[in-house]
Image: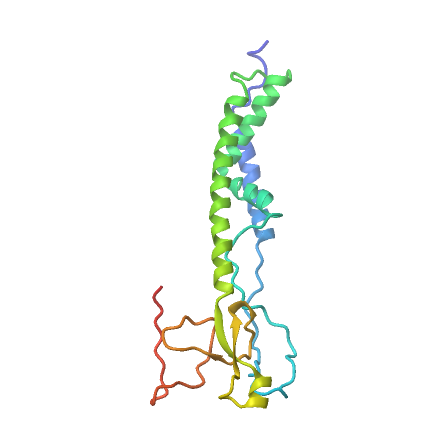
Length: 210
């Protein structure tokens, strides 16, 4: 009879106990930890005769977006099912499907009463995350394409430092060793070391507020 069949009331808690360490393991697997960065030497490019860098450095491009067209769906779904509440309702939905379409046990309600709201909620949240990530892509593009004055070693060697040696360069194309000229009230395009200042005292003042 239906009363003697196995009731799945404790199964969701059982599955949560199993899924929680699995999700933690997947999270650790997908998290990249390079450890502390070793000491490095950077050569300033002041003339055309400077040798090319011996080591490849990371670009100066800013990437704050979490997704792209390829990774959006799998990563967004993974982020949603890192929440135990969503895993709980997914397990309940699976059990309802088993109870409805098999003879293992009886499901008191239709599985779509749980699957429907879960799918709608996850779809709305993923759409919201997609719109926010699109804005991050646009902000990254604007930031990376801003211009800064960078010393061109070839022009400096041929024309001298006061004859067009500074060229406009996109922030994303600035590399370690470039000499950058930052004028008054301009945003700083990268991590810089102050070499000289137009102030008689040789000092420079930086405003860190956004």
